[in-house]
Length: 110
Length: 111
Image (cartoon, rainbow over all chains, first blue to last red; front, side, top):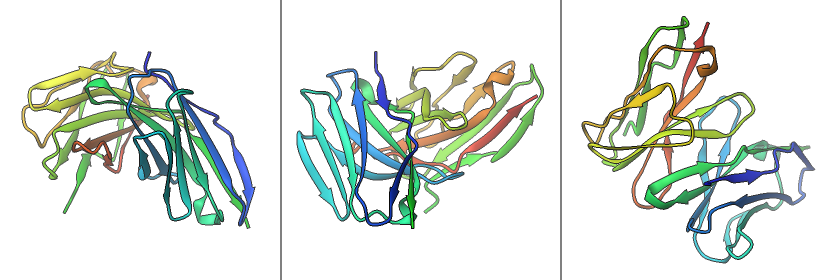
Protein backbone atom coordinates (compact mmCIF):
# COMPACT_ATOMS: atom_id res chain seq x y z
CA UNK A 1 0.00 0.00 0.00
CA UNK A 2 1.29 3.40 -0.95
CA UNK A 3 -0.33 5.60 1.64
CA UNK A 4 0.50 9.01 3.03
CA UNK A 5 -1.27 10.06 6.21
CA UNK A 6 -1.67 13.56 7.57
CA UNK A 7 -3.62 15.07 10.44
CA UNK A 8 -6.26 17.02 8.50
CA UNK A 9 -6.50 19.65 11.25
CA UNK A 10 -7.48 22.37 11.12
CA UNK A 11 -4.43 23.78 12.87
CA UNK A 12 -4.59 27.30 14.23
CA UNK A 13 -1.56 29.22 15.53
CA UNK A 14 -1.05 32.88 16.48
CA UNK A 15 1.13 35.09 14.33
CA UNK A 16 4.81 34.68 15.19
CA UNK A 17 4.39 31.16 16.59
CA UNK A 18 5.83 27.91 15.24
CA UNK A 19 3.47 25.74 13.21
CA UNK A 20 4.23 22.01 13.20
CA UNK A 21 2.81 19.77 10.49
CA UNK A 22 3.21 16.00 10.49
CA UNK A 23 3.02 13.19 7.96
CA UNK A 24 3.60 9.44 7.94
CA UNK A 25 4.05 7.13 4.98
CA UNK A 26 3.44 3.42 4.62
CA UNK A 27 6.04 2.13 2.17
CA UNK A 28 9.68 2.02 3.20
CA UNK A 29 10.57 1.95 -0.49
CA UNK A 30 9.89 5.66 -0.76
CA UNK A 31 13.04 7.77 -0.94
CA UNK A 32 11.81 11.28 -1.69
CA UNK A 33 9.37 13.47 0.20
CA UNK A 34 7.82 16.83 -0.52
CA UNK A 35 5.75 19.52 1.14
CA UNK A 36 3.38 21.54 -1.01
CA UNK A 37 1.32 24.58 -0.07
CA UNK A 38 -2.10 25.12 -1.61
CA UNK A 39 -4.07 28.32 -1.24
CA UNK A 40 -7.83 28.05 -1.58
CA UNK A 41 -8.85 27.69 -5.21
CA UNK A 42 -5.25 27.49 -6.42
CA UNK A 43 -2.82 24.81 -7.51
CA UNK A 44 -0.31 23.27 -5.11
CA UNK A 45 3.18 24.76 -5.10
CA UNK A 46 6.36 23.17 -3.78
CA UNK A 47 7.79 24.46 -0.50
CA UNK A 48 10.38 21.85 0.44
CA UNK A 49 11.82 18.56 -0.71
CA UNK A 50 13.79 16.19 1.51
CA UNK A 51 15.59 12.99 0.64
CA UNK A 52 17.89 12.18 3.59
CA UNK A 53 17.33 11.59 7.28
CA UNK A 54 17.59 14.71 9.40
CA UNK A 55 16.64 18.33 8.98
CA UNK A 56 16.61 20.60 5.96
CA UNK A 57 16.14 24.32 6.44
CA UNK A 58 15.03 26.94 3.93
CA UNK A 59 14.29 30.35 5.42
CA UNK A 60 11.43 30.02 7.90
CA UNK A 61 10.73 26.43 6.83
CA UNK A 62 12.37 23.27 8.18
CA UNK A 63 11.58 19.80 6.89
CA UNK A 64 12.45 16.77 8.99
CA UNK A 65 12.70 13.17 7.83
CA UNK A 66 12.97 10.02 9.93
CA UNK A 67 13.00 6.98 7.66
CA UNK A 68 13.13 4.49 10.54
CA UNK A 69 9.84 5.89 11.87
CA UNK A 70 8.50 6.63 8.37
CA UNK A 71 7.79 10.16 9.49
CA UNK A 72 8.09 13.54 7.79
CA UNK A 73 7.38 16.91 9.34
CA UNK A 74 7.37 20.58 8.41
CA UNK A 75 8.04 23.38 10.85
CA UNK A 76 7.12 26.96 10.00
CA UNK A 77 8.83 29.49 12.23
CA UNK A 78 7.53 33.03 12.81
CA UNK A 79 4.23 32.10 11.20
CA UNK A 80 2.55 34.84 9.17
CA UNK A 81 -1.09 35.25 8.15
CA UNK A 82 0.10 34.72 4.56
CA UNK A 83 1.09 31.17 5.60
CA UNK A 84 -2.59 30.32 6.04
CA UNK A 85 -3.19 27.55 3.51
CA UNK A 86 -3.48 23.79 3.18
CA UNK A 87 -0.17 21.92 3.39
CA UNK A 88 0.13 18.69 1.46
CA UNK A 89 2.71 16.01 2.18
CA UNK A 90 3.80 13.85 -0.77
CA UNK A 91 5.93 10.73 -1.15
CA UNK A 92 7.57 9.51 -4.34
CA UNK A 93 7.36 5.75 -4.65
CA UNK A 94 8.98 3.38 -7.11
CA UNK A 95 8.33 3.99 -10.80
CA UNK A 96 7.69 7.67 -10.08
CA UNK A 97 4.32 7.05 -8.48
CA UNK A 98 3.73 10.28 -6.45
CA UNK A 99 1.16 10.05 -3.65
CA UNK A 100 -0.28 12.80 -1.50
CA UNK A 101 -1.78 12.99 1.96
CA UNK A 102 -5.17 14.55 2.66
CA UNK A 103 -3.56 17.85 3.64
CA UNK A 104 -3.54 19.92 6.84
CA UNK A 105 -5.32 23.25 6.86
CA UNK A 106 -3.31 25.90 8.71
CA UNK A 107 -4.71 29.19 9.92
CA UNK A 108 -2.37 31.85 11.29
CA UNK A 109 -4.27 34.41 13.35
CA UNK A 110 -2.99 38.02 13.50
CA UNK B 1 7.06 30.00 -20.59
CA UNK B 2 3.57 28.51 -20.28
CA UNK B 3 4.48 25.54 -18.02
CA UNK B 4 1.51 23.16 -17.69
CA UNK B 5 -1.65 24.14 -19.51
CA UNK B 6 -5.01 22.53 -18.83
CA UNK B 7 -8.23 22.93 -20.77
CA UNK B 8 -11.07 23.45 -20.16
CA UNK B 9 -11.01 25.29 -16.83
CA UNK B 10 -14.68 24.60 -16.15
CA UNK B 11 -17.11 22.06 -17.58
CA UNK B 12 -20.57 20.78 -16.74
CA UNK B 13 -21.46 17.31 -17.99
CA UNK B 14 -24.63 15.30 -17.90
CA UNK B 15 -24.57 11.78 -16.51
CA UNK B 16 -23.41 9.36 -19.19
CA UNK B 17 -21.62 11.93 -21.33
CA UNK B 18 -17.93 11.62 -22.19
CA UNK B 19 -15.21 14.21 -22.45
CA UNK B 20 -11.47 14.72 -22.61
CA UNK B 21 -9.46 16.97 -20.33
CA UNK B 22 -6.44 18.29 -22.15
CA UNK B 23 -3.00 18.76 -20.60
CA UNK B 24 0.13 20.06 -22.29
CA UNK B 25 3.56 20.97 -20.91
CA UNK B 26 6.40 22.79 -22.61
CA UNK B 27 9.20 21.94 -20.16
CA UNK B 28 10.25 18.69 -21.88
CA UNK B 29 9.36 16.71 -18.75
CA UNK B 30 9.15 12.96 -19.10
CA UNK B 31 6.83 12.42 -16.13
CA UNK B 32 3.22 13.54 -16.15
CA UNK B 33 0.36 12.97 -13.71
CA UNK B 34 -3.38 13.36 -13.39
CA UNK B 35 -4.88 13.93 -9.94
CA UNK B 36 -8.36 14.65 -8.72
CA UNK B 37 -9.14 16.70 -5.64
CA UNK B 38 -12.50 16.52 -3.94
CA UNK B 39 -13.58 19.40 -1.66
CA UNK B 40 -11.47 19.58 1.52
CA UNK B 41 -9.42 16.57 0.50
CA UNK B 42 -5.94 15.86 -0.77
CA UNK B 43 -4.90 14.78 -4.24
CA UNK B 44 -5.77 11.32 -5.48
CA UNK B 45 -3.60 9.92 -8.28
CA UNK B 46 -5.61 8.76 -11.29
CA UNK B 47 -2.96 7.91 -13.88
CA UNK B 48 0.63 8.79 -14.54
CA UNK B 49 3.15 8.44 -17.34
CA UNK B 50 6.93 8.13 -17.30
CA UNK B 51 7.31 8.86 -20.99
CA UNK B 52 5.66 8.78 -24.39
CA UNK B 53 3.83 5.51 -24.91
CA UNK B 54 3.98 4.49 -21.23
CA UNK B 55 1.13 4.94 -18.74
CA UNK B 56 0.31 3.43 -15.35
CA UNK B 57 -2.71 3.36 -13.07
CA UNK B 58 -2.74 5.27 -9.82
CA UNK B 59 -5.09 4.99 -6.84
CA UNK B 60 -8.39 5.80 -8.55
CA UNK B 61 -8.23 4.89 -12.28
CA UNK B 62 -11.75 3.46 -12.70
CA UNK B 63 -13.86 5.49 -15.12
CA UNK B 64 -10.85 7.17 -16.73
CA UNK B 65 -8.43 6.52 -19.55
CA UNK B 66 -5.24 8.22 -20.67
CA UNK B 67 -2.84 8.21 -23.57
CA UNK B 68 0.64 9.64 -24.05
CA UNK B 69 1.51 9.82 -27.73
CA UNK B 70 3.94 12.72 -27.31
CA UNK B 71 6.15 14.04 -24.51
CA UNK B 72 4.13 17.25 -24.36
CA UNK B 73 0.54 15.99 -24.16
CA UNK B 74 -1.27 13.81 -21.62
CA UNK B 75 -5.06 13.89 -22.13
CA UNK B 76 -7.49 12.35 -19.62
CA UNK B 77 -10.63 10.75 -20.99
CA UNK B 78 -13.80 10.38 -18.93
CA UNK B 79 -16.18 7.78 -20.25
CA UNK B 80 -19.81 7.63 -19.11
CA UNK B 81 -19.57 10.48 -16.61
CA UNK B 82 -21.02 9.87 -13.13
CA UNK B 83 -21.77 12.32 -10.28
CA UNK B 84 -18.90 10.72 -8.33
CA UNK B 85 -16.53 12.21 -10.91
CA UNK B 86 -17.45 15.74 -9.90
CA UNK B 87 -14.11 17.12 -8.77
CA UNK B 88 -11.21 19.40 -9.57
CA UNK B 89 -8.67 17.73 -11.84
CA UNK B 90 -5.01 18.69 -11.79
CA UNK B 91 -2.40 17.78 -14.34
CA UNK B 92 1.25 17.96 -13.30
CA UNK B 93 4.67 17.25 -14.74
CA UNK B 94 8.17 16.81 -13.40
CA UNK B 95 11.72 16.08 -14.39
CA UNK B 96 13.95 13.73 -12.41
CA UNK B 97 13.93 16.07 -9.39
CA UNK B 98 10.41 15.06 -8.44
CA UNK B 99 9.18 18.65 -8.04
CA UNK B 100 5.74 18.70 -9.58
CA UNK B 101 4.61 21.64 -11.68
CA UNK B 102 0.84 21.87 -11.69
CA UNK B 103 -1.65 23.24 -14.15
CA UNK B 104 -4.37 25.59 -12.92
CA UNK B 105 -6.90 22.80 -12.64
CA UNK B 106 -10.11 21.82 -14.42
CA UNK B 107 -13.32 22.02 -12.41
CA UNK B 108 -15.78 19.35 -13.57
CA UNK B 109 -19.39 19.02 -12.46
CA UNK B 110 -21.50 16.01 -13.45
CA UNK B 111 -25.24 16.50 -13.09
